[in-house]
Length: 264
Image 1 (spheres, rainbow, N blue to C red):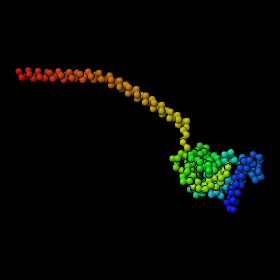
Image 2 (cartoon, rainbow, N blue to C red):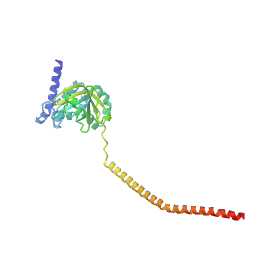
Image 3 (cartoon, rainbow, N blue to C red):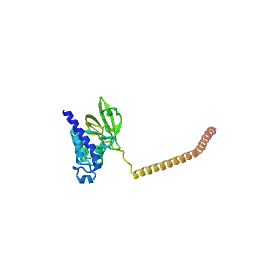
Image 4 (cartoon, rainbow, N blue to C red):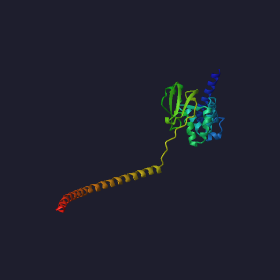
């Protein structure tokens, strides 16, 4: 009876998450505060449902980070209500506790990206995950995850693979058409994005390339002048060599004649 009760609770929570966006379009439910609806925030019941679902699945610490980081819970609930649903890769409490010091050292944008990186853009069932052997899209938008299999276990890693950040699925928390939640044994960290060069940086690179081009052309011109000058010296060198040879030959003929005269 315990498994049936747990499945029933999970199904009720998923249904609650799906009904909240519809309720937002129709009016204000009694339990939602007027201030929250005026600001376009989801009612507290939806937040509690998602937090409870994740906490009961063994990742309460991750659920607390999601609840405390603005915009992340909204993005998850919006994806759940969409046509494709959401796959949530939920790190266990031990993994999150080890990651907390690093998490607090990140900027707000980096914190949001790190949490959204654990959400996939569709609800993957266990069978569908067994078919995936390449990159999948995340709610982070610009970052991808790779999925591979080893000895019957699903291994997730950051893209590109050189980042060496891996996690393994250890448990299926929820499997539904709109929401799939899997417990993983490590926090997935997005790879550092490629630095964007500013306008002045691009301009500096262009100037440096132009300077190198001018210097290269000047060096080629100087080399050509040097070669022309050397070529002009070759005839002079040839005449000088011939003159020296003629002088040595004349000296060689004169020397024996002078010696003969001295003997007489």
